[in-house]
Image (cartoon, rainbow, N blue to C red; front, top):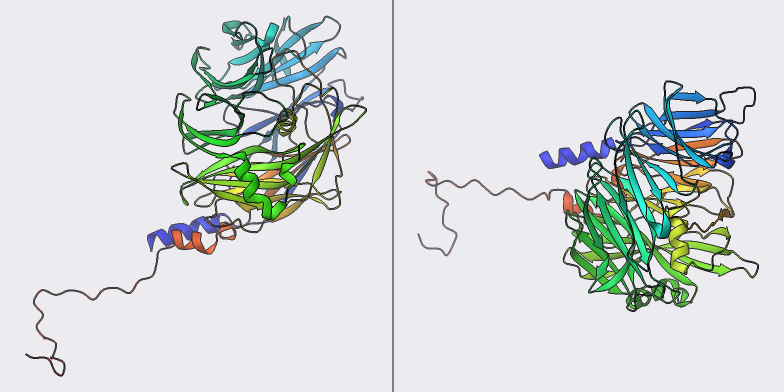
Length: 532
């Protein structure tokens, strides 16, 4: 009964009410670069230039509670017209804002608090060569700048914007470096970068740097059986970090089909502990009955974008998305993404098969020089720019529930919740409208950046990932001069349960055994034919 009561409380806690939304108006979307978060991730900073010409305080920072999407305060500043916003970070109630002064050709750092610029300093760095990072330490501010061949320097500043310490990391001789992602956690600054040599052979590395000392605690090259792998996602579940993606036997990143797919659990110091893998050809074969020969086409592939460790079903799941790239003769590409692919492994690494979720296709038009990007590079770049369908797994009790965004050019766009850890098959999606007007195509502009730092534009419609919130999910939409937020509460958790999972978690009702007495006073009378 105790276990049943706990489960029923969980189900009630997941109960759904209505969706909520709010707007921020008078935003100059041409210069909007997205959000920054505080060290706990429970607050969003939304910096933007205002289109309201009657107010000289033309730069606004809205502070929004990430859990309930309620505006919690704002800062207003007057910024010179020659300043172009780069990005920013939060620490407590203060903000570090970075601008590029086009007149002086230098980057300006501003510490902002209480509607005032407390400290202002300049550094010699181009607009594409500097980035503010979230710091897990209050009143400390971390900035990363890039140099030649992708070398980068991480600098820690105090509240007076004085240098506390810095450290530089450089690629080996003959190689160039590009940072794929930077994420700050309480454990450290986690950087995924790729080194590439003149023959286009690549090696991905995961690096962890202590935020208080800037000392590298580990740097692990992504390999499987001495083959350099191409990781495309990572996640942390119950303190265990997993990463996964694809690999090529020859170590080259071109438009050939991958040789295999893998997912690895990592030790605390970043080393692979258990790796599960399956030949890419086996995945194609397992999905042939559902999607035909689509994955065999040269310009079609799968970009793996997430995963989950489901203790309930003792399984590892990988989520991928089908994509097709069609280059234009005049330059640029049209990329179509559609169905979700789910691979399953047991905890010992045995491949258990593939599932397929039908999703309406959506398109992105990417302009710019894409000649140096392989199909996988372009799909990964679009994923990091917010174009991907799958977003994240909610850390829901018992049942992994995935959150994804369905953009249909003929119907309203929807935020969907769906079971992602079934023992046999995935359940039906629970979808809610987040953009009533159909979106037929999302436009992106790719600009080659010689800097090591990542350069990802914003998607016109995306989800704000927060896997620790299990009651809801939130999306945003960029409109003409308005930013719209939509919060959708999740369906009840029992909507994700199938019969087999219910049997796995609900206690079985068994007939109680009769009490046993050592010295019964009344003995059973013998049946006919028995001897006394």
